[in-house]
Length: 618
Image 1 (spheres, one colour):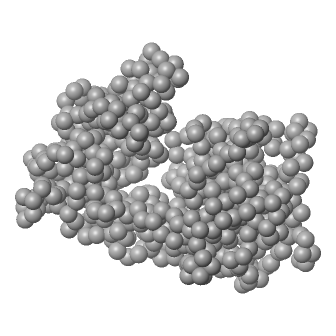
Image 2 (cartoon, one colour):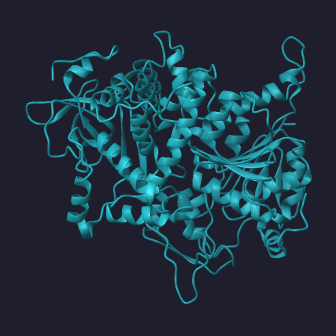
Image 3 (spheres, one colour):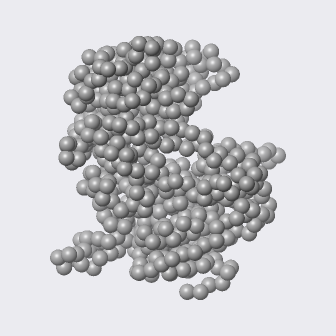
């Protein structure tokens, strides 16, 4: 199919060639139209919609290729769509598919790597369809969902769609899966793409090996891979918070300044941006695998990639070509030395949670065909971690405990602690603690201008055992306030106590959903240990069994199951204490290896853990 330069470029060859953006490409260059690629061999508008919104839809760069996009997706099982951020592909392609009837009676899922993108995009598309979120258009992110039986287009985080596989291995409710932001190569995205390849082979095959109808006569599954960068060939070959204010209009006579992380590169489009200041740096989390699964995360500042630099420049002047400016705080020589693209997340993050989910699907991590193979040491560390948590047996098979852990939408250590809380009779307490630990922001607010006042406020909640019971004290105090105060009153109390009201509100929502899971598992989440700290610490130890350390004579701590010497993080309530043994939420490396989220435990507790090999040579 040939189209003009002003329209969409469609390719059906096995190989795809593309000219990468040059360093000079930026907001003053004309925007490129989206580029569509399909691998070889892959085989209702409402009159009530606001007229101005529909006019805006037609002005998006992707609109000129609307018919070509629908035609190619209709003709092929897998389609790769390349279009720079802001072209409209994320909001418009799902609507084109819906309005063309291509999805039939099934749903259209659009995956996003971040929850804020999924929720904000769902709101936008719902508005364009003249409906409210949760009806025709919905979303599903961890601990939050707005969907109904009428939902036809659902924006989901890639992690949530992976979780859906646990209950529906063939994703039978969906006719089309749109994998957006695929160029970010998150671990969840790579896992999803690997599974979609298998699902398509089952659902799209006319007969199985025995000649029977395939997949219980499910309709074929269409997969659309959307990316803002030029890695089409690789894919084709393979097959209510403060953040919402950035979208609100800027008051007349004022200028809005936005401090943004990498999320602003691709996941969301903020209208009206004219100037971009690019530092050329980013923070990157990387997991360092160690023996016995005792790895730790590092959070280091590094140079961005050339791809990120182009994306950052493209944020400016998106609405009017040539009206934006990007100021790069680095030289062209530095740009040329940057890596072209980032290393896939599957090669730099812990694999424990994803491995547990795959085990529940009956899959072995080592046997899955990934676009990029994970590091063998990281795979071994994840297997060891799951074994020590009791989720896997000696033969790497999933245990009943592991299957129960996987039901909870938590990291495996926290899920293990919650299961142990049932045994120790402290489900209510551990539910509150893990809910706060699972929130996306920190509980305590650091205020450099009022450091003493913030420290005084924090001392009111401090528990002698450390940070975990301190968190519990905060939750209990917040519940007392919430029982008598309005939302504004709760917010004011948090401000006075130097607590993050958004974190606590999110934690309460998480806890409510975890309680629902407990109810489905016939677990009484009301069981409480009262003020008895012992069962709570024992339950937490079951989950944090790998995150233990003993005090050394020199005052430092040594990992019980690893080689690292660690220090207690300055933010901990135990930062100035010396205790015989500790458990901690995580290790982070900055200037030292720090244990963060720390509680003191007696050594005798550790001896009670069945899988723990106590080491006395410290």
